[in-house]
Image 1 (spheres, rainbow, N blue to C red):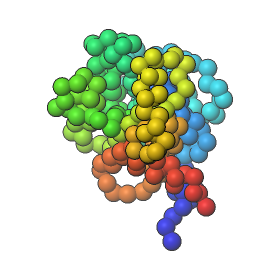
Image 2: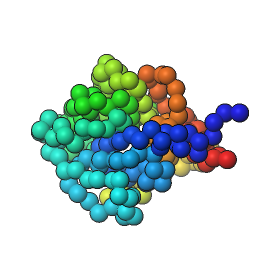
Image 3: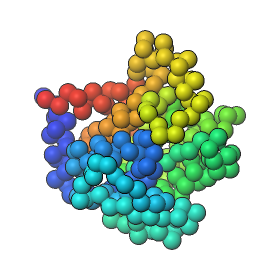
Length: 239
């Protein structure tokens, strides 16, 4: 009989590891923090961001916020020290940050964070990209996500987990008109094929935790949209 999710959580918790989360104020990042708080798999979790924010509900005493300047990230190397596991949920949009700002956040900051984490002993790095990621694409979003995946694979982490969600479903504080219109148009498709073209951000966060506690010797794990749904079912079928 295969090991259940609750057993995996217990075994992983007993290892006494620490982790960091970058991009914890975004929609996927917030859900990841909730999932980490619920399962308590780490002795310490460092939340790395531009500013401190009110965390409601309080995730617990093992969570610590650290403020950094992403443009001078190498000066904040200590924020990554002691973490065997790293999660990256950084992301913005071209509409919000402009082309250069989008590339800086979604590619440059992600890769710089990974480099610093690797040099400080991070063994398992998990990142959220996109279902369409392709470094050879002519489209900025798709190309940037593909470049991130390609560069991370070359960094030779002991384990690299890549999560490739399709359309992210969530209630954002700031409403994006284009995103709302696209979700409305996609609603029939989402209802007919719920695991194909969309996934709730809560599922992404929960899937990242399930992946973390799942043992295996693979150096690379790539989870597409359907597989993210599958990981969440492991969390739901605990017994």
